[in-house]
Length: 196
Image (cartoon, rainbow, N blue to C red; front, side, top):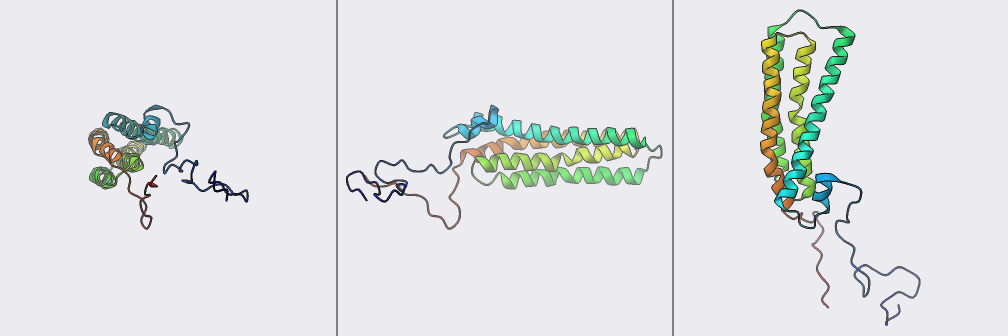
């Protein structure tokens, strides 16, 4: 090792943190993401506005994409098979109850994941809540394809709207998770600065 420059003489690259070598960042900057999510991941310490905007966009896009997919599948099945003209109140009641059950399950999932610190936890909690809450759209789609009564269909679409609004109300908690610093992985000590 060359003592003057702090560089190894055998051709090996210098160790991170050695004299003249910058330390390797813990979270290297992500390149290529734009919009609110890119702003959240690029901000050194994100502020609440940036985090809230990114989490809300993530939630809305995932929920609406799932809902749109359920609608397209419903329309495709209706075009292929046609609607069945025999409504079944028991089936409609079970589908509506299952749809309602997914609202607290989706909220609990998002709430639990938002308890973890870091930007990744914030985005993951919003995504998981959106996926779990958008299951209500699949139940509404199944009710429409199976030809249930309009009163049950209106109730099912009301549950979809309730699920969307309930998840949207959860996004501030998800955004606050992005403001808390991430802890180091288990079994790995926090890096200490080199005394100079």
